[in-house]
Length: 280
Image (tube, rainbow, N blue to C red; front, side):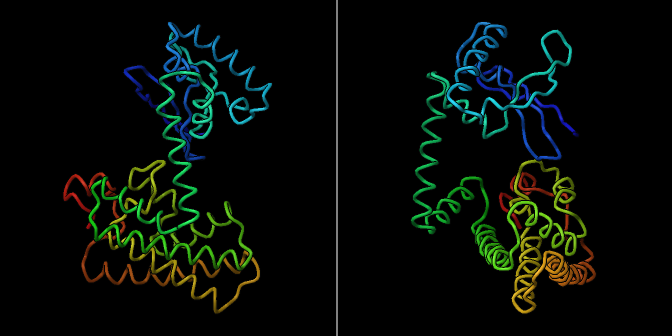
């Protein structure tokens, strides 16, 4: 596993963490989080607290948190030692289980997110409204946001078509998306994200207007070809994904030939927003 070490700060205290490049996940030291939330005086006290809490959660049947991984993290003595770690989902579940005033803001936030999600299921338009608001707060331009929302609609049409053709969510979706992305951009999704210096961030949120347009063209074309060809196997779906991406890839090459500029670039949202306060 390729890992990148990082330190997260929470109220001036260090939360040790590791980035798993293969899984595209952050893992956080559970003991460090427990120490911050419960105001334990030292690391050993936090370890003891976590040991008792882990035993209680295990008896309650809470496997989400208790079935945690162990990774080697830098300890106080300067040595790399195995430590219980949690991914983001496990971390939120842990926070819900800790009786602490510091945990209350997180619990309230999680409850708010849960309520909003239920509202969006009942009225999907609310989801788009909240998404628009979120992007505006981040500093994206309205023009870019409209393009981004359209890309979500195009993606949904594609995944609906995949569902109709028996493509399974998860790994098969990822494989087909990779085929489309490689065919139009020349890079796999992971290579594309690395090219832009991204980790967990959404790739489309870090594309320029032209990148978004070509990605939409690739996905929309794939959808239309699939509707006509009606693929019956995953192999046939994979072939169509490559065809759809290739059409957009040819368009990319024509634009680059005319402008003399590379469309697939290393700029990400931070670069765009800092330089022009909008994606262009």
